[in-house]
Image (cartoon, rainbow over all chains, first blue to last red; front, side, top):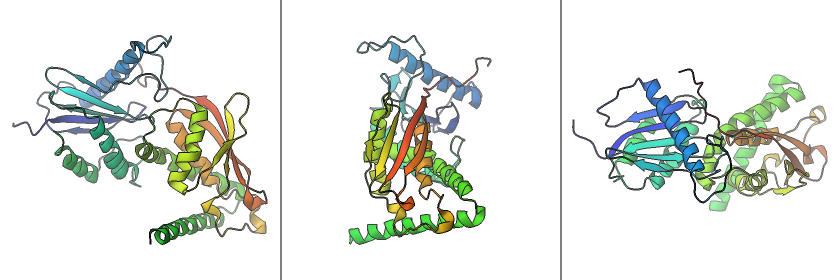
Length: 154
Length: 175
């Protein structure tokens, strides 16, 4: 199976840990069930955030590890890279977390994630009158717009 | 050309809102019930509006209530209603303030009849703010204290922060 471009998969979570959307482009190995996989991903993001806030050398926060954060409080991590993939994250003050897993050579995806949030998620999901916030969604227009957009990413 | 278009859109919005309120009055007949319905409608709008707002305004932080009130008044109202509000009358703790609207596009052409004197015509705005703030971890109470349609000289809503609810780990540890 030829790897189509650099994209591997994408998750969108809300603040309650509900996986609103999971999109996969190329994922040769999956060992967990979707629910376990999504829960693991959310847990990872949550823990990494707590960890990065605690380890921030520029801040003097005295809270213990795992203190719940307010939107925008403390520092926020936006990506990590391993030898086989790169994970990029956008976290909005409304608790929406968009995670993009790509090939490790991918550049900085912060602008791309903002574009996906503003022009694809808000336009096709939030503005869709049939969508119930807080639930998993499946929207053809969203998928089409997303596929179209990621083709332009290098 | 653009000014005419935006005037037409604003008028359409005002008239549509008026039609909704009239329909609610017909359906529910009781003014208090309509007030509640408008607030609930506003809440459902607010929980969606917040993402639209955040995507257009590049706001990344929502930790200080004072800052948030200013952002609602200057950026939020401007973005969605085309007018700005003023923040005033802070209490000692900094948890309660007023948003004062000198210009309110929702009430253009509106006069309340005798039978609807208890109606808070713009109650939808209270719900919108409450819904939007809830999505950014702030639980609030929003209500009108001065209303031009009731004879006051301006529109004033009272915004009270009840609690800030930071993000907790949502899963139980049993799995």
